Length: 295
Image (cartoon, rainbow, N blue to C red):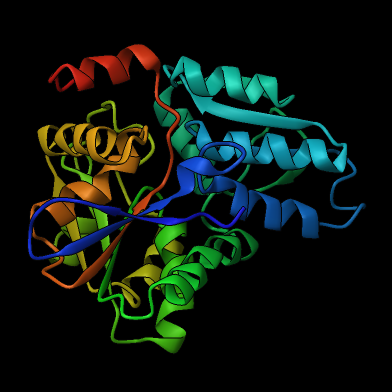
């Protein structure tokens, strides 16, 4: 669905808007890319079903779109993936396979899983997926022509690559910023001239941040973005609380990243859009954040 831009009242000089991908059928933006990739696939491509590797949101998008096409979906997740996301995958008919994080990351990087046949729909390194994500950028330009900056959470890079490709094609002056949790920020490291590989600590921001970059995706994203920021978990939790209090919206960890950076003044002033990428967060975890805790 086309999602709205909602103003976030902060009292500051920047005029911040939230792009609410939480309102998608799977409560995250991932349905755009997954739907585009699977609905465009041929019957022959889908003969053995579909496979993806995802921490949760892409998994739901793939399972949802596969159900629309009437084919099975195998979802490879990292061990410890949020129960809320696992339950949603199974509700949409997906078969869940859990692997240790390093093995799961290898499947993600290689774009292949030996344990299942089917069309592998890479959650980020896939042209059809990135094109689907790009529709967010087109909607933002239509709804807010004077947008000065767009902040986007960065996990594998497919979201910002799609949005920035669409935006920069017609409005190259719009600033595009990637945002990661400080517990795993290889894009911020690489953008600053670092190695692009960092120590990674898992956190409640499970839909963004990583140990290393996906080279092909980063080569594309790097040419499109104007900066990359690493935000502390405290800042992200504070942003999630503010979004809930002021906009009455439930944002997951990755969904709070962009707002955290905007609230910290990272994108300057003017019309700023923060992509709230998803709202799939465990209710008890969300309650802890609302009570002032940083999980």
